[in-house]
Length: 226
Length: 312
Figure 1 (tube, chains in turn blue, red):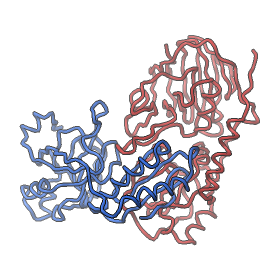
Figure 2 (tube, rainbow over the protein chains, first blue to last red):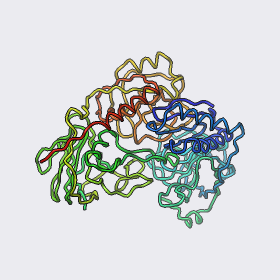
Figure 3 (tube, chains in turn green, blue):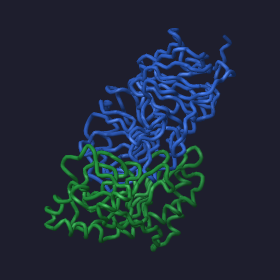
Figure 4 (cartoon, rainbow over the protein chains, first blue to last red):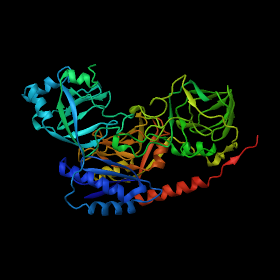
């Protein structure tokens, strides 16, 4: 565990330096413990792959008190923080018409598109972080055989619901946005809906499975192909 | 009842004090780039702290009152006229339905706050009315104001004509010293590189907005290219591979993978946000103790600045 200054109102806690389910479980457990320990002095928390940014109100408390409480809270977790989190299934219509890079990715990997689909939908992913845009969840890790670098030229417009791969990460675009990830399909589930409860179907620490669906099912679930 | 936008300026945004506690679903803070000027706008109007006002960047805005109320403008030196008559900033003015309120382009500084008595009544999203255009959240439609927009506000008949004495008003300059708490990946910047940052002048580039201010000057080298994406606090100073620092502000992304050398004090970041391209920035290190002392002192000084009353 390493706890460093970030700014006048923030400390950053490092629980490791690589992507792993064990570290992610500790990040999640640390968030819950820090929330309890800081209570009303806490303004916000930003969990990510191996770190937690702890934002506090510097007019109510200071970095020494916050640091002390964070250290105690995290020390009491022990070495084997158990992962809680739910498992969420997201339907995906995998096809060239829904994922512009599906065929290129398969070709590059020396696989058929069916094999790419089976590898992508055959693993369980963990939600490592949420950021970049509202509701954008970084999921990891995809099978090494279908890992693919970001596009040399990012697209100006990636459609909402696009399922994509970048390196060993995968994600569902929550809204139309620019993006440089490799598109392999479309998910009809809204990843960010301010009017829904919950607003997002996933949270950091949850696990995600992708379930291949037909074009017909995709459209029936409200999916669009524009 | 409202204030009508007759002609929107370069960038007019409804803002309250910002959106907090929503980083975990990827939402940034938003809120006023210059919280000091925003705070005085509401304080002069005897509004609840954090009441929604319009943040006007650069100027060129024209509003028309459709209600009898009081207004106040604080911040950069933008000439304010009501029905063509020049009026001072940092002072409460009466407006009647039909009155024209115009803000010309700023002389010094670049952000102003236009407030009304009791604030604009806008429905909050995720607990705040702050507009973040990148996220399409807050304000009227998650966008900047445009001509024809109506900003809802109540008819108010009782307010004092409070003002802040000229010698107590902030003076915006074209040079800012950012006090920086070294932190984050500081250890990955050699002593020489850190000394370089703290001993040279940087210039505000054309690429400066509510997300961050990109600066130009001697390049700072870091011994790592990138890091595992992690949370970014307000004021964080990111050093991308070209070595040109970016000071991240209210609308920054919540996580990112570039190394950071530390974070600027919020008091100084507010002054940075009043700079335009070409402005000069110096960096000076400060300890977390020093930063907290500076914050408490500024808070205490601000709360003791007297507001005077004009009797027209």
